[in-house]
Image 1 (spheres, rainbow, N blue to C red):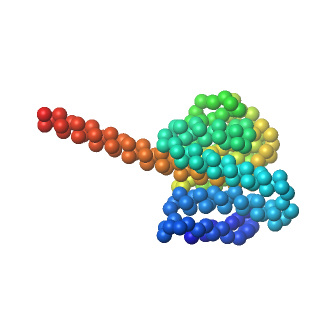
Image 2: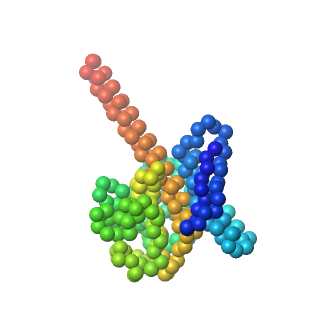
Image 3: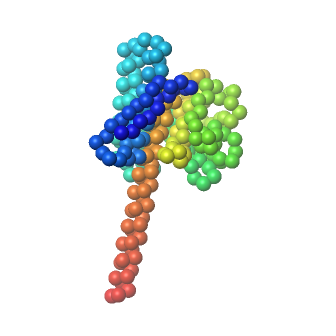
Length: 239
């Protein structure tokens, strides 16, 4: 079995123990268990402070269902570009966020290949990691960042085509290795909370696992193509 500590903010709610009928727990199974823990921890924290209403329970259930649906869809995609383009509409339709950006780390910068303004797809943006920005902070610190009012944060750089007043950015990470940033933004001040942060991080974790699988598949495919080409060349030289 695999045990995870349930935490929310600075408090601790308990432990989550997940049992599998296998001798070893895979990284994918650990990631799934951590995703479940991230979703239920805020719910447990709230239930300890207030009586949990039916609407709150229903919302928690809907969010778990959404993460499961996104996880299943992403796990079936083995192309990096397709992953980036498909995760955005799934998050938009499921959560109703106005603006979403997905950026991947490439050497000394993060490249946001997918940025949306509502239903409009905007040109890619490149942000240097050695320059102060919210993206650079999230990647370097490997932590989520919730900004209630971007006007009060010196790290924020305005986008010319989007009216942003608040935002939430989480690392796309696997085994503490940050591969990018998933960001949502709003034209309203303080439009996100810790529940949104837990949910977005859970989605980012599933995206990280899917990206790793797609990259490994791409590498294996390239090696197979090279091996086939070399075999053909050897046959031609013999003939």
